[in-house]
Length: 338
Ligand SMILES: Cc1cc2nc3c(=O)[nH]c(=O)nc-3n(C[C@H](O)[C@H](O)[C@H](O)COP(=O)(O)O)c2cc1C
Image (cartoon, rainbow, N blue to C red; front, side, top):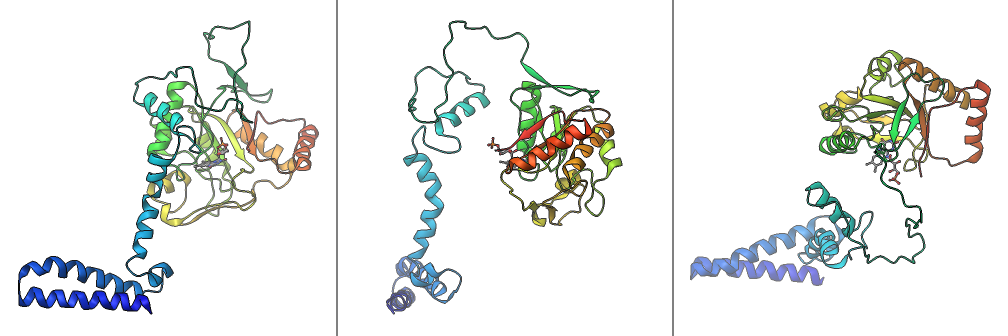
């Protein structure tokens, strides 16, 4: 009842202001116009049925939405401490900004962090300190069945698809990989034009949607795969079995996001919703996975092939190990997701 009376009062006040503006002085418009806007807003809020807050608190309810919009900035600029934000706190972001602008990349000693906190990680001192190696440390990817091994850096860019990240982000990550000599995992969205511009080493990830090497009906297209896998920029192939953030339901890229560039990279039609099914069609047993690894290695001309998975069940992983023993064949690497 009160809300109706409040809006009625606004309507009456606006009408009175209107009459005064027309009948006496034009200065009354300064009051009549805002009152008319408030009255119209109040009527709209009362009559709409979408937001209960606006219906219950006409006009005033908008303050709540305004505060909600300002909340991240207030949190970031006034409340968050230098070390409190997640996933990256201000101190870490400042370092990234400085390095990106070429200002400086060093951090002075001293810390605001609680070094006694559980989980605080640090490098222990040694009496046998070492100088920086002349050659950057790498690990060889490529077992006996691999004819084009790849010496991969110790820190690399984890799989994040073009589509989940923008073209600029992909290009920046790949440019970083080229500058730093590390590898950039494409994610299951396949290889886009943004992966190519800077020429950084790529690990091509093949998910259950087989993007970039898929048949019309969403299966694995061996010929298409072979064509793209021999590209010298592709240094290794990773089969995505599972991923921590997608426990068992697969993935979905809404049609609204599938523009011409994403469609080109993934080999799908523009504007169609693309689904990564929960399971692969190219194999459905541990032996099938081991055989698929061998097949991709052969099709790619002997490049390192491995798989990525999130280990939810010890027994399932042991079954894959048994399959490797049975086939006497191992992947060149395994990526374990958290
Ligand atoms: C934006 C974004 C997109 C991702 N896309 C993929 C993907 O396409 N394929 C994949 O295997 N993992 C994907 N991941 C998962 C990451 O590769 C990684 O496994 C996950 O973030 C866990 O690593 P972290 O703890 O270092 O973040 C994605 C993660 C993010 C944040």
